[in-house]
Image 1 (cartoon, one colour):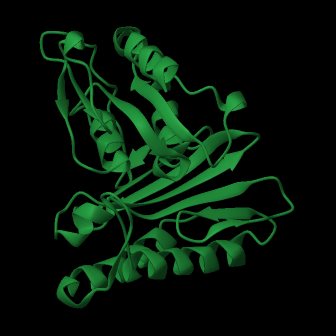
Image 2 (tube, helix red, strand yellow):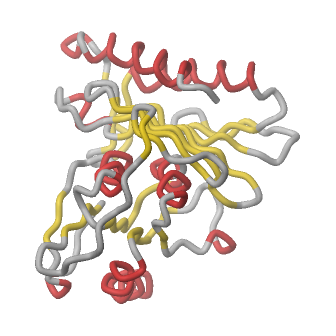
Amino acid sequence: MSRRSPRKAGERALDHFRSLSSLPVETKGHLDLVTEADKDVEAFLIGSLREAFPDDGIMGEESGEIPGASGRVWVIDPIDGTFNFVRGGQNWAISIGLYENRRPSFGVIYAPVRDLILVGGKTVPTRLNGQPIKPLPALDMSRASTGFSRFISDDLKISFRFCGAATLSMIEVVMGETDGYVSLGDSTWDVMAALPILGHLGISNTIDWDRIDLSSKLRFACGSEEFLSKVRPLIEKVSAAA
């Protein structure tokens, strides 16, 4: 997939973003919203992917799964951070990930307001706006910081940042703004693009893909091995209590 389709999808999203006062908004659950922008962007991406990869399956947050013959599935979150989008915030992004052989293998993330496009995967070097990413710094526990999706234990003595969009939180890891990310309830479409991008940089995660499917809710952490050693007990504790 080229960067052309995500950018065109971003243009559509921005058109809606500029007219928020007239944008219809539906509620799926507590703080879980869907707008015409989500539906429009997802429909555009599905059309683009079906044209480019007719044998591949597609799974969209809003439209569900479209079976394919190849065994590969493109997983779409048309607007990750819809709540932020509706409030007029900057922290939202378009996420397109490729799932094959039961693993994330490639991803594209585009944050239109910030004009950031992140591409990478198992065989594709990670690039931010076309530029290589610098190696991540070693973990310094005196200044450690993590993004998170729900909550995090005070026992870890790690400061946290919450931006309301998993894709943006993981972009912060790529850019060295945080040391890792802790998720206690993301969906696969929230992270399918970001994980292979991070993986190419040597950023590990705690997901056991052999035990989940595309409909699963995820409890995991990603970061350096040293970071994971600090937060893994929390993930195990929460997972055991669920």
